[in-house]
Length: 186
Image 1 (cartoon, rainbow, N blue to C red):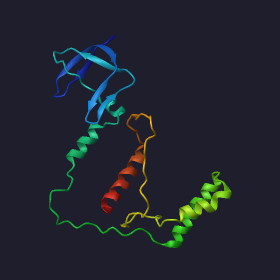
Image 2: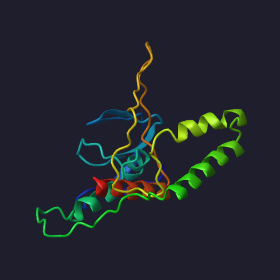
Image 3: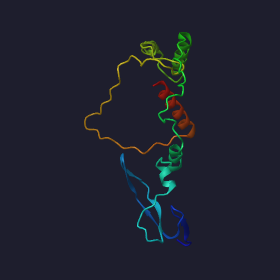
Image 4: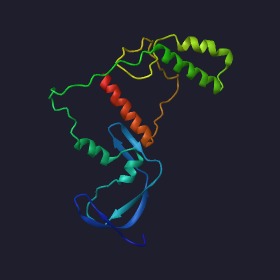
């Protein structure tokens, strides 16, 4: 490096980095090893510590936001064992049969508009209306009365590990709201 970089360490101590290298990193986590495919630029610090500090940019690329996790830890969860607080009533889902039928028919029409075969639309309707699972709004309904889906791996296939997924902020907000609704519904 042409110019040394001043670095602030945890605890407020300052040091300098005069050299840089690129390393392929593998992190051991509770879920197993996480391999970072592209070499990560690493600064070599002028101090006696032989530790390895992982920067916020690398953690965020892996989907780990330390600041957000600290916020969640610092925010009181409200579960202090005091059950005097009233739980809001969650209403049952929308059971307006005509509105549900119109929404389902609109989905079938969208499928046709997107190229679904016209000669198979009656079979689609039979499948769609076979079970009473359609709602316009989530509610306190009993579970759907359908056979659970079974997933089996084909003989000889190997499991594949994928990178942590990154979601757009709007989608993350939707998932959080949706999961909160599911928790409220039990």
